[in-house]
Image 1 (cartoon, rainbow, N blue to C red):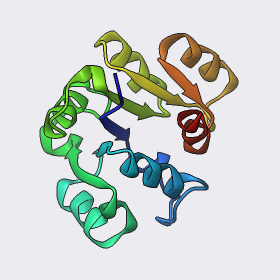
Image 2: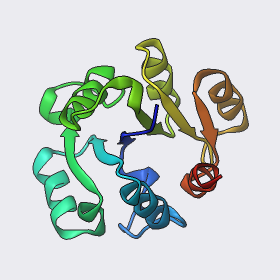
Image 3: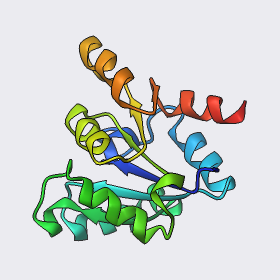
Length: 151
C-alpha cells in the first residue's frame, strides 16, 4: 500500500530551537505533500501554542493539524495521540507512519502496532541499535527518508 499519512512526533524532528528548518526537512515535507501524503503533528505544546506555530510558521503549509498531549492530559508517547492524528488524517493505520526520534515513543508505538520510522540522527549509538529492531524503517534524518522514497 502507498503511504497516505505521516505523523511527526514533536517539532524537534522538523525545526531547531529557533524555529528554523533543519537541513533537508523542507524538501522532505515538500516531496511528501507532492505525493499526496497528509501530515499531522503530535506535540507537548499547549494547543494554542501549536496552532500559533502552524499559523505563523512554515510548518502550516505542510501540516493539516496538531494533537496536543497537554490538551488530552497524557504524555506525548501515548499511542492514543497518534491514533487520533491518523483518524484526523482520514486514513487507516496501515497507510500511515509515525516519525519519531524518541525511544520511549518508539517502544510504545511498536507495542501498539503502529508503523514507525525512527529518525536516529540525534540518538545515542545504543538507542539507534535498539531502534533498528523496533522501527519499520530507520533513517538518520528526513533527507535520507526522502532519498529512499525517490528510488
